Structure formats: C-alpha cells, structure tokens
Amino acid sequence: MIALVTVPQASLLGALLAQIAAFILVSIAGIVFPFKLRNVWESAGGHKILGIPTVTLAGIGGVIVLGALMLMFIFDNTINSAFNVTKSLSLYFMIGVIVVGIIWYVAAYLLNRSQGVDVSLAYREIPPE
View 1: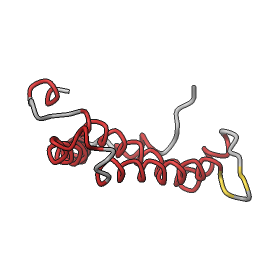
View 2: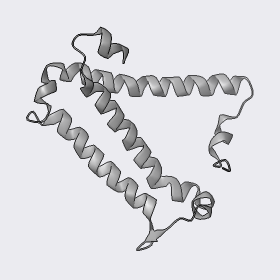
View 3: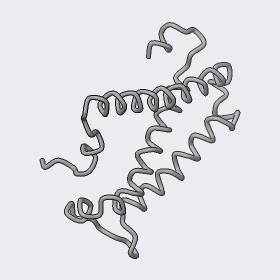
C-alpha cells in the first residue's frame, strides 16, 4: 500500500498479482491438507468425490483458475493494457512480496529456534474451537 501511494508508477496490478499468488499457495495447501493431516481432515467431516477429497478437488480447481488468471494478467495485452505502463514494476512488486514473505518466515523461524521455540508444533494440529 505504501508503494501505491508514494510511487507514481505503481498500480494495483502488483498488489493483485501478489494476492493471486497468495491464493494459489492457499489452493496448494488445500490440495495436500487431506494427505498431510488426514486425522484432522477426517475429524472435520472430510468428504470425497470419486475417492478424491473434495478439498483437494477445490484446490486443484483454484490452482488452475488462479494460475490462468495470473497468466492472463501478465501476458495478455488486451487484458492488462490498462496496466501496461506499470507492468514491469508490478511484476517486480509481486515477486518482491513473495521473496520478503519467505525471508520474513525464515528469519522468524531461525530466531524462534535460537530461543528454543519449536515453531513446527504450531502446524501439527488445528486448535479446537
């Protein structure tokens, strides 16, 4: 948001692409969830269609649709013509958001590990509601 306000060449395309990339990661998490945490998925009332977990099917659909949408925004000039002037900056912004997120996670993980906190325990089970 700071870049959108302070950099005249910035556009919402970068934020939109970063958001699409984030939702692709959520879709991937949905694909692997029933296999990685089977007990949690089954206890939440997991359903299957043709033997495939529905959340996996939804995740696959999300990756396909969001991936196609991202590719259209990046490569189809008729769609992204409104953003064409700022397309390069937007792509750098999207990649930068992902890279900063990865660096932030690794730094937090290493900092917590050095203090004796096992962060991976937080992801082993969904807390009760």
